[in-house]
Image: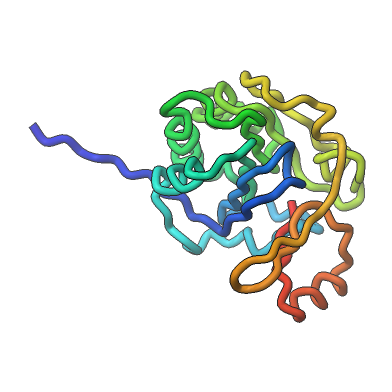
Length: 208
């Protein structure tokens, strides 16, 4: 009998580690490539393209993340739920030896709860994660008092209970030193001109 091995891949835009401004505690953050929503004022428009950026085995990525002593994991984009099968397998694999994150898993999604409900894998994913920051980014409704970027967005609470709402009531940013330069991540209030000047100076800007 032939057994077919199914390998799940992400189209990965990039990784941020460590980070403390993209959810509570010391976290690993991944940015998935590809988003169909095209929100005006999006912080990461370079994540929209569905062209393959970095094809990576989700189990290899999960093992890499699990090799660190982390409080939590944050999954951003792009739009993570356009890769739902790989996203589900990735999270299930992370749980192979139980819940590895004392401060849970947080996902940023531009989809509303009603839209997410139509994605079959969503119902299993929400059983394994703590919270989803849900909804389109609205530049005209920008807010600064929580991990919600605009007032139309909402928290969808998963079945895991490792993150408390009060731990999400802030916005900040950090500059991370990497081998190939500096990365600005989190929630800086940048004008397009400031962002351009930073990038011209060699600072990679990765915002949520």
